Image 1 (cartoon, rainbow, N blue to C red):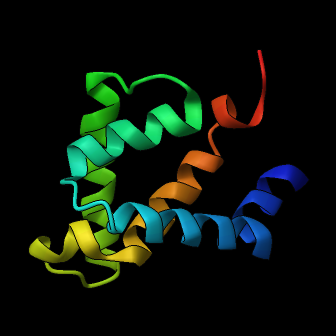
Image 2 (tube, helix red, strand yellow):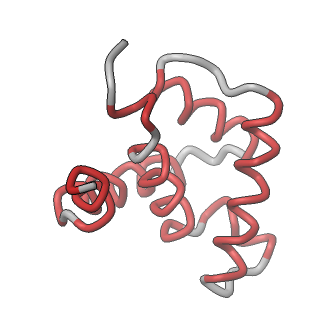
Length: 97
């Protein structure tokens, strides 16, 4: 549990998620290709169709939480920061097989 809490609350992790969000929001990509690129970079593999769908739904929930209009989603750093941090928290990211 301590490792999970660190991934959620540690200033370094939050800062890395913010830096990644800043980089990806500058790429000009739409959400689906951006999701694919982030999965490749974080996990070394492309996302499944279900993961893309789930990620898009999660991004919409984050946009609602942060009161972001649908058209602003691709450029809104805070939404993508939260998404990046969620990728950091995946067991597949944390543990080497």
